[in-house]
Image 1: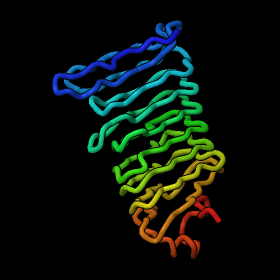
Image 2: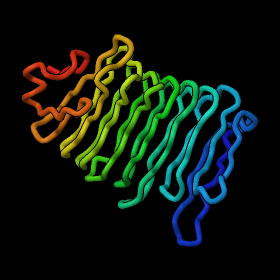
Image 3: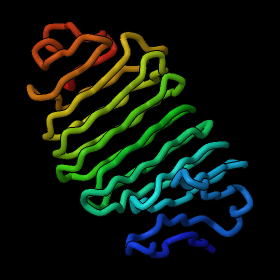
Image 4: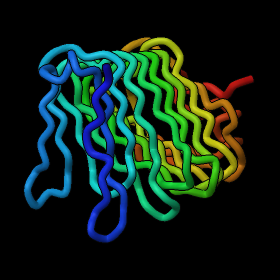
Length: 223
């Protein structure tokens, strides 16, 4: 049987984040409200599957510790609010991050292995920020953003495995990458347009620059 944690109403009328977890797994995760930090800390002390987190934008969330398998994170923040989450687990496999509202997304995969993740932000003009840290391994994942001006960051030094696809939507988006990466993976830009920019180190590249072969060879336009 699943157990729901949180989901109450704050004094200002905003909704609290919710965590849905099987009762048998409650001992595998420690949940703490950090004083004066306005953040919920999830410390996973044993591999856990199928945890669900509803992000209402009322308080930041950070997850660390052991492996997450098949987690579902849902951005349920109202328009103008931001669902902020940091992931530092040793491995996050098959994450499904979905947005059901017009809320903004601030997702920071700070470290660990990120395997076959799927990230979908709001279809509206929400402003989204998605980043992967320098010690992260990104393996066969996909990112889809909406009509807002979004920023995606792949820090230099991270490891890429397989193909990771970015569908950046109709907004004026910025994709930042380091000048180098570990591994043999590729970053596929599926709908990069004339108004988007690819930042490589100190260089800002337009669509025409990428088409002329000025981007690193591990970055490809989807044919």
